Length: 117
Image (cartoon, rainbow, N blue to C red; front, side, top):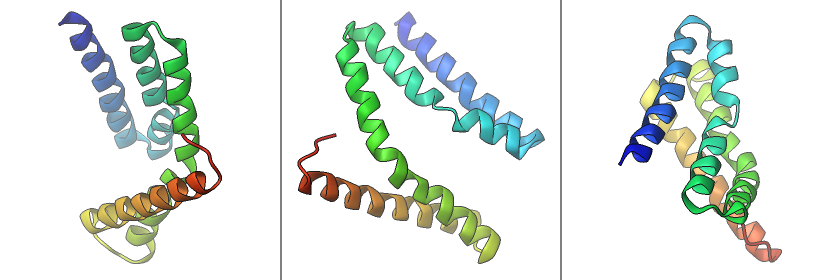
């Protein structure tokens, strides 16, 4: 029980810290959240739970394949808000939809070339 609480606390502190930092400086908040902290935490929690370095490496490889398509959110959402004047929620939905489409396209492309992330 305590290990799960520690994981939740550490993970939550990083996310809340980034949001609070973002209130003071969008750039500083972006720097903190753009670091692959969630991936590092997930790989670390996986390794500590299983003792399996290969499982952590496989997770890292999967993330590496999905970084590029995930950037769709960070292109579409600011474009929709800053250039098109959309509200937050429609922009977020559009960014998530674009990301899902890019994930699907990436998955299909990887399968076509025999790569299994």
